[in-house]
Amino acid sequence: MDRLARAGDETAFDFPIGLQGRGGFDFSFAGVKTALLYKVRDLGDLDEAVRADLAASYQEAIMRPLADRLIEAAMQHDVAAVTIGGGVAANSRLRALVEDAAACNGLQVAMPDFSLCTDNAAMIGAAAQFTPVVAYPDYIGMDAIATAPPGGIAA
Image (cartoon, rainbow, N blue to C red; front, side, top):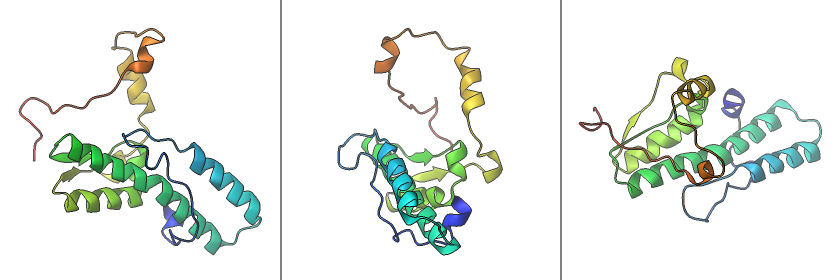
């Protein structure tokens, strides 16, 4: 999608933004996924230019809220640096949005090389074997809170 979107216009199609305006840092992409399904169905056969515009518009609707909420969280929690990881960190639009927004807000950015941006599912699964089991329904109320390592974040 990233390659195709580079040739498209991110303003060509309107897609909903996940949980826009609800506050907090939670979001869902269910609405934008459904909107894409309907848009593709309604458009029928797509030429390469329309496919590129569709990809760019859809990508923008997903990546912009990710970047915006990352920066909002960093500012709210008064951190000095942000990073992205996993497969989504291979998206060039997300990387650009995060770098631009971080620079505008005086934040440092740490980005892994593209070759290291892969799905983290295996890593999460491996780490889970060393984590105490939390029974249902207790795990539903858990939050992930990032803290700086002892000595702070290396520059």
